[in-house]
Image 1 (tube, one colour):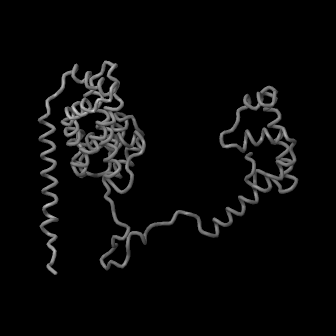
Image 2 (cartoon, helix red, strand yellow):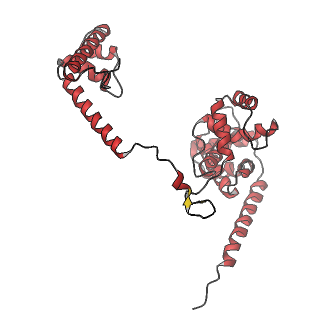
Image 3 (spheres, rainbow, N blue to C red):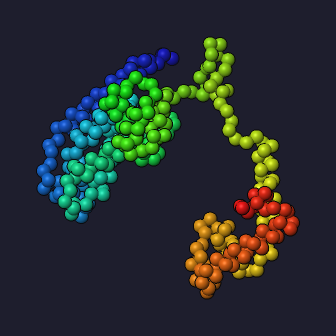
Length: 303
């Protein structure tokens, strides 16, 4: 059986991919631009009549915008073809949501969608650890290096208090967020199985600290929680039905009913609901104190 030759295929794949990217970029740049009137007409034909030919012409004319936007994110080390594909997704979303009746150029509208989709892709794939989840973190991720370079702070060291304050003010984020992102961007992903030391007998995962409770502490906490729950249930059983309803709706429900809602439900004023609630809490405290001591010390009712 003849041996297979894998090396030429492995080396040819990147070249084929690069050639495909070049052909796509060249074709995108060759498509003529649309005038404002042409954009509006094509967008209207797609929105009102689902004319796919109009959709194709509208999107093909804006492929160059996708390529240009994707090129701005190449420094993050992700495949250019993937960035373009994510930008194309943003282009299709923009075409689906664009309202031609508004006095807005489609090219202006589509720019936000393309950039947003590419940014989300970069954030998902730049590191195995999710880097940005809030708007402040996203703003820092894409702007921190640029601002540091502008201020001459490019030595890779820690931020000075002055630069930290300037960045926080410019991006309207907290200084703690600036420090966190600067630390995150200066770090690299490391395998948990990477060896530590010269003898390679220890791995990074061996140095991780388990921050969860010890098994015996977890059992004790669960037992105490179940005991307190039973005690509280017994104390609530001493209340009359109306008091139980108010306590359960006001104190034990995740959503929590307002005084006004309970007043309408029971046919009384919200002030009367408040009085009944306070009286019921006093009854619960007395019942717990008689049976188990100070309820605040037991963690049942706060002081």
